[in-house]
Image 1: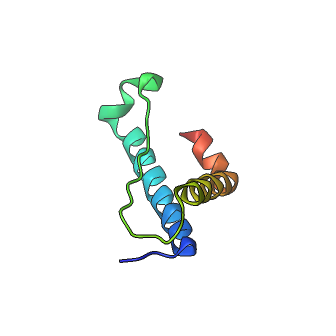
Image 2: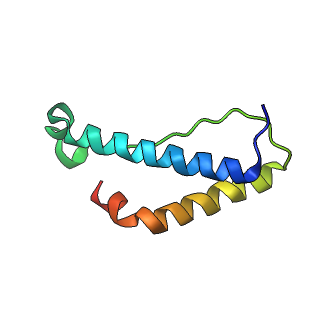
Length: 80
């Protein structure tokens, strides 16, 4: 199915919220916490949808959306 660029941005935002919550839950897990600050986390987002736009515009949309999202949730991200 096709995705509009606006819906794509919202999908990225929703996925980042879920991913950050999962990282937070993992850090609270005693099995993970016992390793202390040596544990690092990476968040990978996978999307597979048709979009009528160039790769450059998708890349820019992702960059802009993540930058905006981190601006709003920066204090939560720093805690992780």
